[in-house]
Structures are given as C-alpha cells and as structure tokens.
Amino acid sequence: MSMPAALPGALIDTFGRVHDSLRISVTDRCNIRCSYCMPETGAPFRPHSEILTYEEIERFVRIAVSLGVTKVRITGGEPLVRKDLPALVAMLRRIDGLSEMALTTNGVLLKQQATALHAAGLRRLNVHLDTLDRERFLHIARRDDLGNVLDGLAAAREAGFDPIKINAVALKGLTEPDIVPLALFGRKHDFEVRFIEFMPLDGQHLWDRSKVLTMDEILAVLEREVGPLEAIPDADPRAPALEYRYQDGGGRVGFIASVSRPFCLNCNRIRLTSDGRIRYCLFAMEETDVRELLRNGSPDSEVAQTIASTVRGKWLGHEIASAGFVAPPRPMYSIGG
Image (cartoon, rainbow, N blue to C red; front, side, top):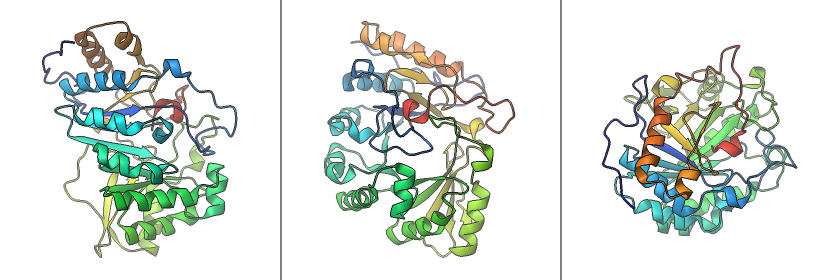
C-alpha cells in the first residue's frame, strides 16, 4: 500500500490553525451511565460491523501522521471495553513520527489493564473522576464503581504511568462539594486535576447554561480553601486546558473552560469517531465518512486528501456561548471524548 509523500502544511485550515492532534474513539459503548452524558437505559450503539477495526485505525493514523499529526488520544465511549486495546496501542506506537499517545478512560477496568497498556507503550493517562464520595458517584455514574476507579489509579501509578490526570466534570448544584476533596486528592497523589465545564453534549439534551460551574467559580474556591494559584508561564496556547500551579509547589490544576472561555482560535484537533467519521470540531454539525474509503480499496492518497479537505472546511468556532448555538445531533459518547 503506497504512502503519500509528506505534505507540509496539509492540515492548516483557512484561519491558519495547524492541526497536529488527533482524537480517536475506539467504541461508543460505556460501562457506566453518567447522568450528564448517557441515558440510564436504551442508549443506541453502533453495530460492531460499523466500528473501525484496529487495522483500519492504524492505517488512518499512519496517513494522518504523514500529514503532520504528531499526537494521538484514544477515547470512547469507554475505550477499555474494546477487546485487546493494548494491541492497538502497540500498533500505533510503531508509527514513525507519532511522538505522543494518551488515553482517556473512566478507570473502571484500569486495574486489570494498566500493566498491559504500559507494556504496549502507553505512558499518558486521563482518568475521569467527578467525585470521591461513593454515594454521589453512584448518583452521577449510576454504577457503584468508585472503588474500582481508585484501584485503577493506584495500579496505573504502580505500572509507571506519568503523567496521570484526573478529569472532573463540574455541574452547578451537584459537584461543588467535590472541588476541594478532588484538589487535595490530586495534591496528595501527584495527579493533575482538570475541571471541565459542563458542555451541551449529553444524550438527553439536559444541558442548560445555568448548570455550568465555571472556571472562575472553581478557581475562586480553590484559592480560598486550598491555596494560592498562579498561571503556568509559557503554556502551549493550543492546549485545551488552562493550567495553574499552586504557589507552595503542591502540584497543578487545570481547567477546560469550553463554555466560559472558548479556545477555538487556537484549536489544533481533529477527531475520528468509532464508526469512521472525521470531525473537525467536537460540536460540528457535519462529519466526513472515511470508513468507506478505508474499506473499499481507496489509495492512501485519497484518504489523505479527505483528511486535508475536512480540515480546510473547519469553521471558525462553535459559538457555544452565543444565543444561536445549536448542539450537534450526536452525544459525547458517540463522538468521542
């Protein structure tokens, strides 16, 4: 199978943004049912025949790397429910030019898979954890799995993962009591806790601007009850998180403020859904089918042109804070986190 020649600048959109980061969803299925993400029952999933194989994912990534992608994040649904995920990690690790690979997981199955994932070449982890309170975890996730997540974090640390970050969705009227305990937990165990503003990507259309617990509100709580913070100097402007460090040297905390402080103008990311659609934005209303190209014998050059043209068609931004914002028809678990 012929590889396209390297195409410098192929993934620059019409606004001058360079795209070098690819998020890959390997499944739309999940083993918990967070209330702000999925319905408790009846969530529609794609049949297995429509989900990209590991070989198809590897081919797509190899082509994307030839166009300038250097970073990959594996997501879901919950990626660890996909059978033999370490095999995919090993396949991607062998791609020349791919400098960084990370995984986002809810951590429920991490204890069983941490060692194998690390052995396959994965080093960076983000673990989703909204609360350290068992009853509130059960209320949010509708599964009694807090102990499994904590065991998974311990196993990941033992396996040698570094860095390990914790992703916590912040909802007004629900997770305010969790801000300080999570921050202290992160400081104690050297985890960077990232607070994520509640975004309109739930499968039940429950999002409301009044439910967003903003970065500024969380930051005020942390500085009042944990300790003074300062912005990380010379931070990567294209990174999705705004990062701060405690002035006493006790670690870092991050904020993904997609609602109150959109970072569209610096976005460097494209997405591949588990069923083989390219999306230039998490909130995009359109997507490009690449699965058929991967399955019908199309040359790599045609796949490369499809990736590049999708990036060229990227909009300026999602305008999530505007009155005219419309949420995409696919929920987060179907798009990929």
